[in-house]
Image 1 (cartoon, helix red, strand yellow):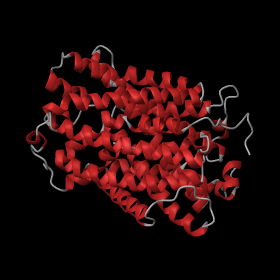
Image 2 (tube, rainbow, N blue to C red; image 1 turned 135 degrees about the vertical axis):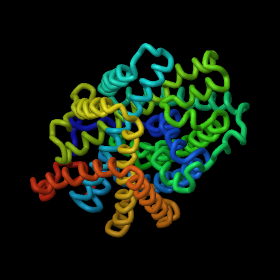
Image 3 (cartoon, rainbow, N blue to C red; image 1 turned 45 degrees about the horizontal axis):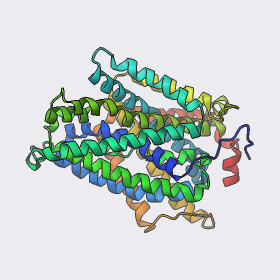
Image 4 (cartoon, rainbow, N blue to C red; image 1 turned 90 degrees about the vertical axis):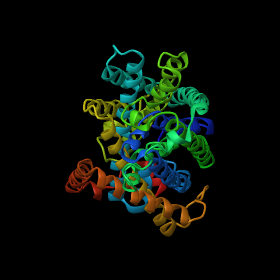
Length: 442
């Protein structure tokens, strides 16, 4: 068992988990999803979003069973390890790490774009790089402090999206939304799936603070369910209303669609437009901050289990935060920023997420079979239908992403097989992992 010097601090309550769950995702309501319009049009993207909403509803209600039963900082890695052993844990850990390492650079691009929208003299890249420095610093101070910060900025971000919907709703026109609704036919629906996933991507990151939650078996389900309900309402509201107030082609390839849409209906020089662009940073900040928490805990857990260099599992004695994990993930993100391609970074992150969803649902089925006695404070409703639907839609999403983004998929899977090959050649799969918490779970 971890001691007070090396373990993480249990301080989080349901309100903090709601803030982390919503905060992790809420930037997806501000930008990124609009790239889906470029490949599907408004109606095609609406259908894609509804499919992905069903995926996340069924996935989160199933995933919560795993998170509450095995509260571990490794999240999906821990569930796959318990279900399938070291190789399953490795594949799931790799996929989760890609998701959480490549989501922050995309958000940092958007942060830079919002600042550039307000102050054109400030380059996008400068703001994006500065974001890493600032939020790694905040996360070094401790998880409770980070969670309080998440709560404040998430509340502001949710309030701002509600304000945005209230401002644009009077300008909504059905004819605008239905203009050129399926320009690429039904195939566009499948091409748009990764961008619809961006509406909800990373909500599963709540699992990675499980070791820092008070009474995780009761509180983790509450945080997930309240967070998901909030995000469904915001995602559908923002997407439909925005599509009905402005030409989707004008908004489909920029990183600041909401202030641009508000500028089109109220005037770019309107006080509301400037106010929205200014406070719009809160939504991006909330997600960026949450993803920094997510990637650092995943790096920490993988290093503690022997999958990554062990120094990355070091915990700061004063603040009890995984400082080297925070820094290492930040360096990877800064390198990704230099590519300057938001949509491709989003797709890589989504690829990691979908692979992890598939492994997690298979792990759920396997653990139900091999460990029927495992204490399950929360059980997936309508089992086996909910996890089966989540698994099916995840596989469909993966096939669509690979088909429409073949080269990026080659890069993702080549990285997976290369690292797995090294892992097997070194014989690490034959060693017991050094993670006492997971060994106790097994």
